[in-house]
Image (cartoon, rainbow, N blue to C red; front, side, top):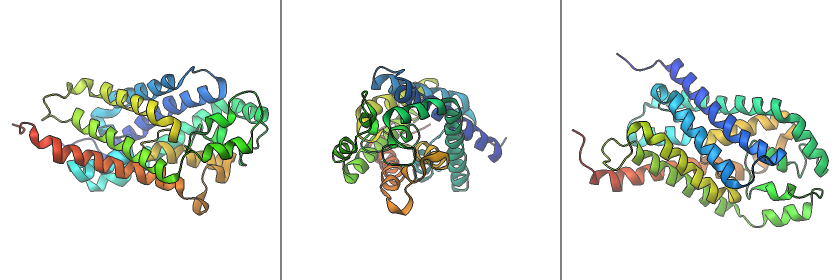
Length: 284
């Protein structure tokens, strides 16, 4: 029997990415807009659980890549069919976009109230404090909206001076490389130290949670081009405009949140396959 049809795996990737973004970005919405989370770890563990659930839900059908960087790394190192790369990525971005739209429907009154309380206009400087619920920024702009006072351009400028584009690129590259390394190790049938296949999603999710705990204050911890671009695209259409999607005026978001995770996944997965996997017993 042949594997699942292309439409079916695309639906699986769409739904898996939808679950990931709805729960993960939903936790960000709740934290930023309502103060529902008391610390970064609470948001981080929701992201980890979201990945676990998405993999358990659709992994048997599509492999639950739910991340273009992992799809590309799988094509390069594990023989994933080239003909399915673009359909997978389209499904992943679409799932992220629709999840962002669903969250906007649920939280828009809270977004408007936050912007009014801080004296910012959606689509203008300072509205990063709500746009961060969708696309990502470096450094994480949460502190410009913290406290009871209005938005401060001076505080915003001081915050942005703490994280250069090069350092942000490295953070996303390194974080995704570590994630890809663990994913390839945890799912390698030749690895005697890997968890049983039914437990691999737990360790992958926990890896993401730990990485978010370290890197989120710097870049919001993307590690997934679809996670950034789908919600970012939606936000640009929902009133944030160039604050969400700067276009050619500022391509740092493209380098940091699209190119860096993709390159990181390729390098991290390759590091495992070239330097670690050959030491394991050959598959029988």
